Every structure is written in structure tokens, then in C-alpha cells.
Amino acid sequence: MPSKRLLDELMRYIEFSAEDAALMSEMGPLLRSHFPAVIDHFYQAIDRTPGAAAVFTGGAEQIARQKVMLHGWLEGLVGGVYDEQYIERRARIGRTHVRIALDQRYMFAGMNIVRAELHEGLDTSAQWPLDKLRLGHRAIDRLCDMELAIMLETYREAYIARVKDAERLATIGQVAASIGHELRNPLAVMQTSVQLLARRLPEEERTAKHLRRLCEQITLCNEIISDLLELARDRAPERRPTDLAAVVEEAATSVPRPSEVTLTLQIDAGLPTVAVDPGQFRQLVINLVLNATQAIAGAGRIELRLQVEDRHLVLVVQDTGSGISAEAEARLFEPLFTTRSTGTGLGLALCRRITEKHSGSISAANHPDGGASFVVRVPLTGWEVQA
Image (cartoon, rainbow, N blue to C red; front, side, top):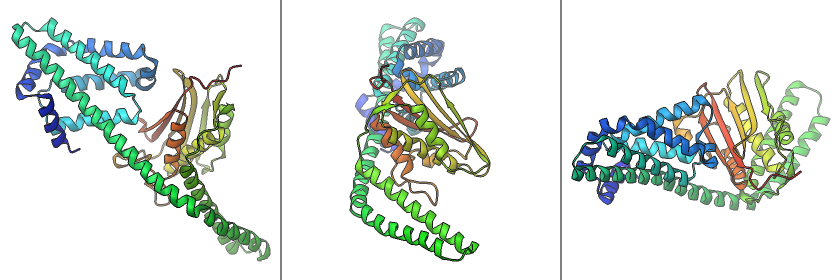
């Protein structure tokens, strides 16, 4: 929904008025001294909640950055200007919550903490008549309600996008199911013929080069058909006890990469045996490492980490490529969306499908040191194999 229309609708429905805006601005100097307490209580609540902590927290530097961002968000509450730019800034935060797969219940709980702390800050700081104090509390409630509504709108946008993705996948599935197998038959004939020609023709480098190209392109066609059929089948994972460390290591090292691109694996030694679909997880790792390899132009490195954090398996694949553009970020996991001229737009869509089938989430972001970082989180609860 366009920002202007959303702003008009929310202000009319919530009855947030110019008087409320002026009161929020007037309360700014009173509430700012209470911001550190708001931030402390917010993160104390996160620390008490494993599900929220798994999404919000990280290393000390990351938490420090998050606290700075929260302080900036609080400053926006008391800025006194609530226009289209304000709506768009808040919507960007909501889209980030969607991207990192923040459960909406934590969003509501977090806003409740902020709301309660702001009310307390006003009560302890303002020497206002009771009537004006009541109006101040009402302005806080209305603005917090508007903030929640903006956040919910971003989740609605994401849901609509997911429905469209599902419709697109259904169309892809119909096409793939009808022609996939028919395409494989002529491709198999072509591959056999190329192999026969390679044995029969004289050993001449130029001829051998073209035959290799034909084999590579036939293999690529088969891989595209396989990805299309995998997306179309929507197969449920066949969970069985799996040494995930071994699966991930084998999959990552099997991906071809230029000699100037290094691959580093950091896999926790104490990973539990878990009940997952090893074939699907192998495909997930291959797609992510291949995507990272293709993102690097020239020399670079790929770092893969697999560990347990807060009852979640966490797989991180980070590269030193050019990163993710702002235009691509919102559509990164859409089927058939690609930024490469030779890409199919199926690999990352398949990664998301596999992750979701394992009750997990996948997100992507640019790394502060450059390049992109893809993070897969899969809950352990219920899927550990008892010794």
C-alpha cells in the first residue's frame, strides 16, 4: 500500500491528530532521559525468551548496533513529524523483521514493553495537570498502535508476496510435470551421442573443446529440469537420523569453484545427531555454496559455519562478493528471480522451500565487512535423536 494512503487510513482509524503529534514532540525532552531504561528492559525481556534471543541477539558488537538502532527508533517516536517519510522508515524496519523471520508475537510483546516504559517515563518525569497527562498517555497509546499497524502491514505485504510465489510455483509445477520427463529423453539421447562422438572422432583439441561444451550444457539442462521438478513436487522431508556435519562437509566441498576462491568450514564438533532429510539438506548446502561461488568475481573466500545456538541448528554461508543490491533484497528468494544473466532463479527459492519444510527460516543480508551472508535456522526441538 502506498505510504500516503496508509498514513491517511491509520491516522483516521486510530484518531491520531495534530494535537497528539504536538504532545509527542513536547514529551520528547521528558522521555529521552528514560530511553536507556526502555532499551535495558527490552533486551532483558529478549534474554529471557530463547525464541526472541535466537533472532535478535548475536555478538557484543551486533547487540551494541541493535541498541543504537532501537535508540534511533525511540527518537523517531518523539520527533513530532509523522508523514510519508516516517511511514516508509518504519516500514523498512518491519520488512527487516519479516526478512529475519521475527515471529509477530515477539513484535507485539516488544511493543508492549516499550509502551509500558514510555507511560512510566511520562508519569515520573512530567509535572503536568492530570488532564494534560491523560492526553499525553493517550498520544503514546495511539502512536504505538500506529507503529504496530505499520509493522503488521509489512507482514501482510510479505504474505501476499508468498501467495503470489505459491501461485507462480503452481504454474511452474504444471509446466515442469508435463514436459520435464519428455525433455529428459532427448537430452539423454544427445548425451549418449556426444559421448559416442568423443570416442569416434580424431583426438583434436578444438573438436574435444566443443564436445565438452555440449556435455556441460546438457548437464546444465538436466540440472534445471531437476530443480523445476523438485520445486513442483513439493515433497515432504523424509527425516532420519543424520550426521549433519558429514553431510554439510561433503556437500560444500563437492561444489566446483575456481582455485582463487577458498572455502573455510567451521563445524561444531559436538553437533547432535538430528532427524532431517539428508538429501534435501545436501541440496540446500550445495545451492548456497554455489550461489556464494558465483557471487565472487576473481579471488575471494567463502566461510561456512554450522553450529547450535539457542536450541537451533544455525548454518551460515558468507562470501566476499559484491553483496546484495537494494533492488534484489526484497525478491531474493522468489522463484525465477535472478541477477545473473546465466542464472535460473531456482536455487535460492529451493533453499527457502527446504528450510521451511524443516520448520526453519532463511535470511540474507550484506555483511559489514563486505559480501553477503545467508543464515539458515532450524529448530532442534523434537528432532534430536536420543543416544
